Length: 425
Image (cartoon, rainbow, N blue to C red; front, side, top):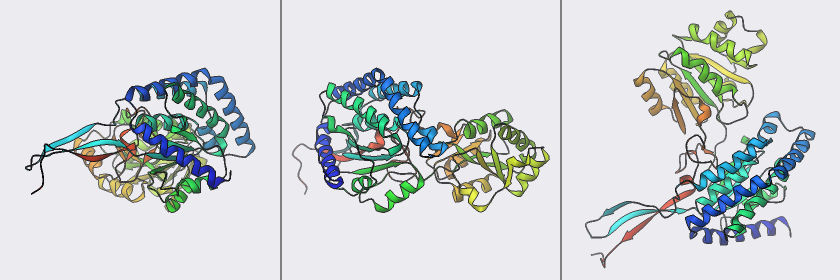
């Protein structure tokens, strides 16, 4: 069949499966997740072989290093996928939860019940673990899923999809509850995002170009973030012992993730004392610093090699590098830091290092991002680290789902009413 017919078939199957999942018991959903984890462990060698094939083709095709890093699956990564499925199975099932019940003067009781969204389309690049994470979260939240991974991870995604189908079948749930698109033609994405009769929400995970295209062309709601220009601000009241470890982890633990720090702000009062140590650490790690005039003057006086220092352009303040590069700026104070972040940030994750409670609380209240942290690395902005078991993605929108999107973010609430024969006067 052609692409249109193929995607329509996936959509119809997903819609039918979504109705089964909405009524599925917690026990059946958990059984499927545990069976998926077992299948992934049993097929570990096959998954790694499929990933190796993807990597060979990606390198031959000149895929960027940051995407190669995301694409790479190790034995540890396979086990992490299996553990993630089991952790989601262990999470409370949100579906059917009734909250906020209140009795009205008329005698009726009004409350809210948590329900699935229906069918979720997920479009992602490079990361094969997303296939397992997305399957787990959609299933546990009672949603059917249509997953369209990048062509660079085709072989591994299909191998993981087989494990998912094995788990669904073992629990007696429709294998069409989670469908992985088997064609790489980009036209498949165009169909997926314009099928409101079958798809209730789209979650894109990938590069800025992909997400901009989907946001522009989609005819169904989109949960998204465009990029991750995350900031670390070193306050004048920062604990010196915390500064370097936090900056080091936030920037250098992994370069290719959306929660990696891309911008460093340092209060003018402490910049001459703290920037040299931070700069030496970053230079040792091979990180290029693109700084304002004041920060460059301090860093040059420290003796850092000239090839690690460069004057920042206006574009650098809003850049997501996904590379060993960081923008550095000396700011006047907390007010200046908050203003800079709210101007240039992508709204993903920001952190302040301070021992001043008032400053910390102002930062939490006034910085308009999906995750805001005090004395911690931005790398913690992650569904697993937040106790969600896994995440479907990060949302920088201001709709019901913001930040790491776990089970609750894949549900909505409907109003319910309990009566005893009341009629409206």
